[in-house]
Length: 234
Ligand SMILES: [Zn+2]
Image 1 (cartoon, rainbow, N blue to C red):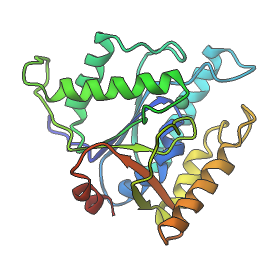
Image 2 (image 1 turned 90 degrees about the horizontal axis):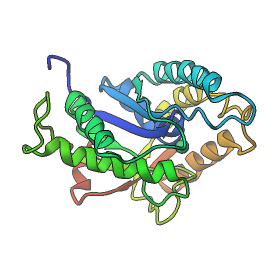
Image 3 (image 1 turned 135 degrees about the vertical axis):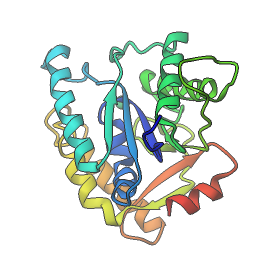
Image 4 (image 1 turned 90 degrees about the vertical axis):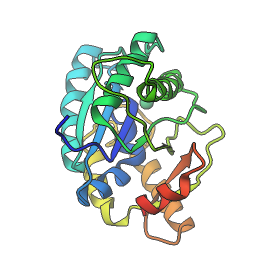
């Protein structure tokens, strides 16, 4: 318990999700000296059309370590299987234990309005895990912890009902984000045909235009105390 609590913990369904969708926010805060953690619920190892899941998992481990290093964040991944994530009581307690260990002030994770099953399940797992983490009645090895704010980054697979409510200027961390995301072959267009780099660069430009700054990331809030968080994230 001697380590500094996390300022921000980002939970993604697959390695690459949070780096692509909110890596600029993570890098911005890491550059400012905040402790930033990334947690991948799965490695996303089933997403390669040619490589075996076992081989792609090894590649994703390398990529997510390099991406986290470029962002200035710490990273870990859980042992869930890509495309077979399950919101079991054990999985909820695993997230609970992580929240109690990391003690984040802010959590970023998937919005539930997704067409990807793993993303919907990740949303519910993280929300349930946070509820368990703050419950004094949930007796685990570590004491309870209350997350102050939860936000949902903008992910191309989670668009249903997403509302851009907070605009974070990521101009200062944009190059670092591009470098980090580029550690993934997926971002470089070498895995599937979806143009990840084009999409997320365009999105940063659109949100930046709306926010009257160079580049921005949009987040959706889930709690009413968002003004406090806005002041913190600005
Ligand atoms: Zn994903």
